[in-house]
Length: 379
Image 1 (cartoon, rainbow, N blue to C red):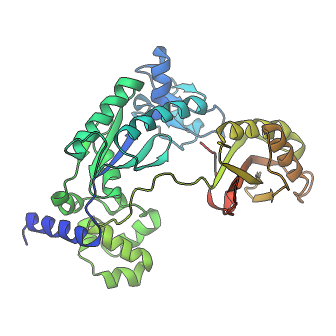
Image 2 (cartoon, rainbow, N blue to C red):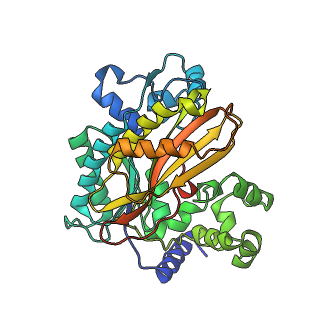
Image 3 (tube, helix red, strand yellow):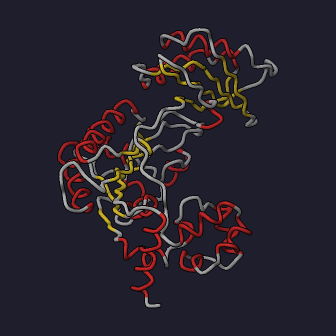
């Protein structure tokens, strides 16, 4: 079958599994670092690393000037400093980043109500129908990017495709400040040469297992029967089969209900339990500022600790009444320290606190535990 025919067949296959949708994935370029460069002209065109200094700190974001030196997010800050000694380190300001993110989401809302935020700096949008009456999803993506640039002074990249994972791959295709479109009839030809690691859910272990089978590209993956992939990878084998054929039935999910909210910090030097009072107060204030208490309230307070030898433990408590202030939240967190039964000399490299078990004020619905499903900072 000729490639064009294969692509057409792939489009038909996708359509048989789910209605054809127009999905846009918008991803702000080097978001935190770009906000810093926008707000401080002295930082423009310089390698900016958004991170607290310290041997245990990690990079939150890096400007494109810094990325040329191999610096990337989640890298230890100390390594980033070695890679680029003249980099400018800026401590993160998540309150400011959230404010800019809210501006961007307000722009999204002008075009569609079907918006699924993935983080402060990226989101899926279903623009199968759009509020502005624009004829194509590509026109919508162009208009959104132009609005973001005009109103925030920042650049965003976007991908347009008939499925969520394809749109996300596309948004990264021409970064920074780019737009890439995958038409339905182009899906299979576009996917075929890609390394399998580009598919969502294919991490190092799965990639290694696929390599052992002689499967390195999506095109090679597509040649393998569903039965073979299911036998080797179980349920995920069927998912791999679908992805290789351009099939993704997931819909954009707007208005997702928050299940937890948390923040944590890693110390420059290990601390004892008695030295955690001040950090707990700071974390409580940070979480409380991010909390929307208009309709739902958190009932459970959770404490997370990591010892100097990387042992992880959590403690939680659901008081008769939910905390009503940051100070009360901090006090409940401090009380959980008394339930830590390790030797007094134990030292801790990390502390985190959070709120979970969110309930409507009128009626409650239990939510899963906090750190069991959503470890890490609220940001």
